[in-house]
Image (cartoon, rainbow over all chains, first blue to last red):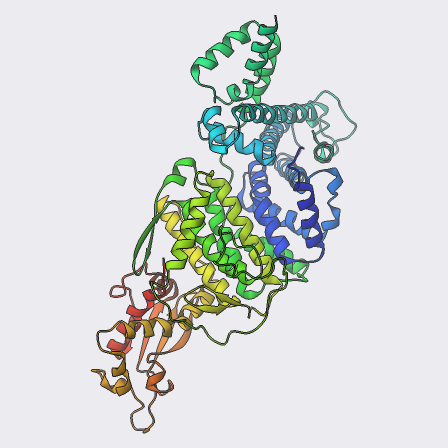
Length: 220
Length: 407
């Protein structure tokens, strides 16, 4: 995922400070990424307690293992996004499986939709700041691209470009997400034995999340 | 052909804006006509519009305010910090995070709402982004004390800033708050700094002002963690206090103004946690003698009258009766509620002798109410208070408390 120029350096700095045990670094990490982590967890799990629990777990993971983050594979944000997404979907699937005895086709469809929606929301929140800012100014605030350009102090040309590029990045993520959930390639054995081939969606296992991490890391 | 190509490219560059519904209707009509006979553009238009469709905001779960502390506590039990945030820095980190969470949810109209910020001398009317400029302008005093750049353009004035790049702040102790004599209203510098920063930030998107304010907060706490003694003197212009008090002061103001903003946009706003509230109350109580002195000074009687001792007061309860030694009166403040505690407040200035003897009265207040009173957000004559003993002395304290507020 494209990021602004000094973002990788900032991530590495934060990682070093976390490794040194600076409580302020933990606080900054939380302030920066908790809305994303908690929001993503909440969208997928739609349960206040479960979302809070997962948020706690994710931040504890980074705090205890700051070295697990590899800056060469993408931003801290995308790493945490992928981690949250994967664990939340795992949890959702486990919950459904527990309730239904096994995850049937309908449940898997639902999980897929929920996961895609959450994923896209996350991608929007993770867009590079200039792109996100331009898109939100126009889309949520209902301004024309000319007004947006004026407000942000950029040229109209730049505003148009940012909107186009931002949406293109989003569209690419969306397509990849759909590709990942396409139930066409049956794989042997889902996360739980005895899943129906169709419903398993095969790629939807915990591996899907890991793929996500790699895709993120590779950048777009 | 060339002109067609140019037209095609021009229209194509509009596709993102079009998908977001950000193209004025005449231009949009032209583009939509073009889409009917340009498959290339039509394909991209469909793709971008589909992506834009996902932007529709689906409200995520509200992030509970208490979650931050829960998560951090959970992390810190599992791996204790090697470089912790000093206890006196905690209220500031919590209150700035809380305000930030409120601002994150504000829509464009809400950023235009005007918040009322009462203080004992009047009321300021500011938009949320201007409140942030105000908070940042005052926080700037701490930044300067810690060797960080002043967020206010032009700095604290006349090149008095410390050398740049100093990371470890000076540690010399400040014994007690002191009030330097000065001409003009003591808040003039604060008001002026707020105005300068607000003017500089005017026209910026509010979220950008918010991001800038937030960055300053983080830098401040980070530097504070390097000066855990908290002795570094911070010069507010009207008083110099040690860093540990300055941080509690900033947390308090952030809470008060956060609530001012929340009221303007009709959002709920949580009070500080009991531990943090207690630190705020403690600071206010320690500053109270200054407010009482200010109140005495503002009385019509000449200041020299005080030399006659507190005996001159109508109630005559001032001096240590029977000891033959003059002592200043004291009052017992009992704070109720989750931040419960007790404090003895000296009522008279140094001229009345050292404070001592039995407290002339006891007053019982809820902790949050006391803070609201100190912020001049309550009427001292109406705040619910349990009174025992000298009622006049209690009134004196209640009326002096709002004097701790400032614009």
